[in-house]
Length: 219
Image (cartoon, rainbow, N blue to C red; front, side):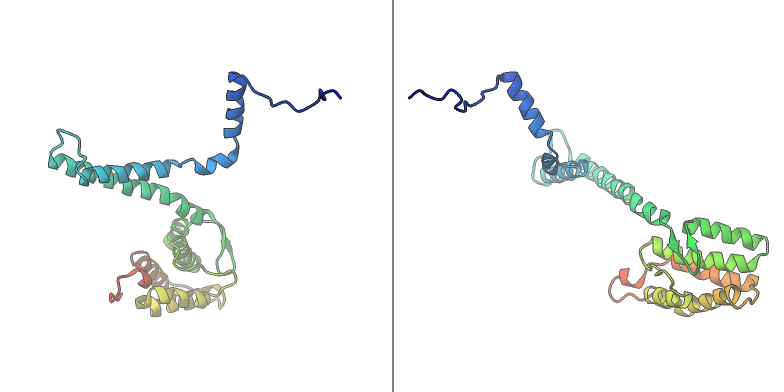
């Protein structure tokens, strides 16, 4: 009985074919998981630099002051990198439309403040007050401190904000009442009431929330 001619024979590629197969295989996205990101490479380089610096691996000719200066430069670069890479997240928060007390708001806190100031300059106190209170809420949302839930009332927001800024609790509640007065009760706003809302917005912007303060430090 003869040997079958159709028996499977292993395919042995030549050099060019083998290289092409390898390139195709390595192009599979599964291998991207193991590929270090630029941030990974940067972090590794910084760690290696400090390991050499404090482990006696300083290049010949480097005096102690050069090593110190190099360390300061590296730390500064790290801080700048973190600041730059942190900005997209803040920008994403600012660009996200949110429901703010009966209005879908696309503007950032800075834009809302500018609009409030324009209304105040024109003596349009009702509009100035509502825009400034929304700026306050938008700013705390952008900072990740208080996100006003869709449909939340100004007083619910003020209570949440007061937990982060207990020293401002009474003024936040008063600002919420002023918003209600001009927005829903049709009571006319004034320069004095606008200034009160603006000042609590300014003080909140200049303060760290209570939960970020070191233990035992009160606002």
